[in-house]
Image (cartoon, rainbow, N blue to C red; front, side):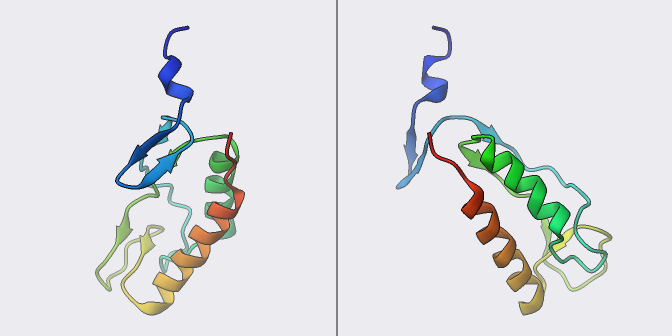
Length: 97
């Protein structure tokens, strides 16, 4: 079968992915205008996690305390907490095969 390794686990630096399928980072524009995680953003990543992606790279996040329309921001504790909560809900949706 071609690509037989694609569906086998791989361990990199102590983290094991159930397969070798990776969803790369793409900015969705689904954050609030203030850079907070929205239900739509969580649902997008939850769908991908449930779909069996082995490694999911979350989109870019703005680190400076400036306006950046509809991009995630991690410039202060409130926004980092929002991202943390979003990440936990995404991880809870992940399936392993």
